[in-house]
Length: 312
Image 1 (cartoon, rainbow, N blue to C red):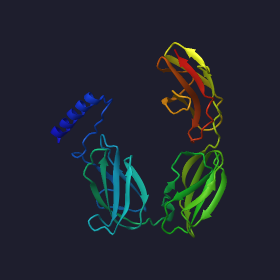
Image 2: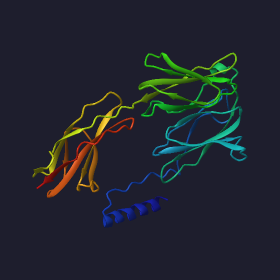
Image 3: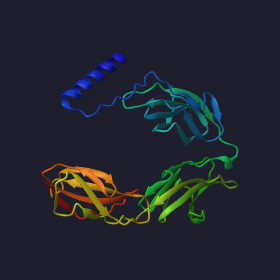
Image 4: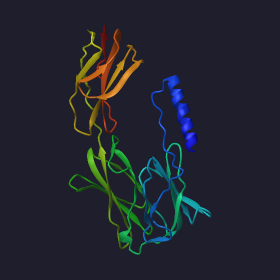
């Protein structure tokens, strides 16, 4: 395997010499590495339907394939979970039963063998200690859409779910109960907490909480300043500058677009920039440029007016 890898590297170096490749990246071979499971360990009993899987990280792995079968993979009645995650832990809700779980590390070129363990889930005798697992939206999500679908996993023996929206003072601003595991809310502008708890005839769980930011405000239109429209200069290092008044909301960024044609089809460069910004261009060329602003919620401004300039 090592000889083959060295041969392939040599071939790619020769290829890049012939064809002027800028860079070739190789990812480490993971086939001889092993994933170490932390929990649930083999033959463990989990006395809660909310199960968290943990394992040790593997150097140079980019993600992990996690699978859970009932009762095991050799005689599986069903594979209840099959997912790829970047982290080294994952939480889900499982019914009372016997299970087998396994994890392998992966990158774009190889995978480790699976590490496997058996475990049994027993429902907690105390309904109030059960955790509601939220599915979507993810924690700290930023969106420009006010209508948001909230989703969570079902809880055994739950009769209803209570869903609340809270302001920045933790005051309840909206509340709804439902027998389903999803509900839609119209969120207010800004940062809002949302939380869900399960209820039955005599008990309720604790709330599980996440935060969502709504930003529907479009950034202001930038105003191009230099190089001025129809200007000429001799220096190939061009100083671009513009102005734009920020608006309240999520973080805003400016992107510059420089083209070689008035139809704006021959893109020379596009970069996230701050004013002023230096860009080196070619002599004897006419350019067309503008600025557009974006924010974390994917709102985008109008483009600035397109300016033309020439480097003599």
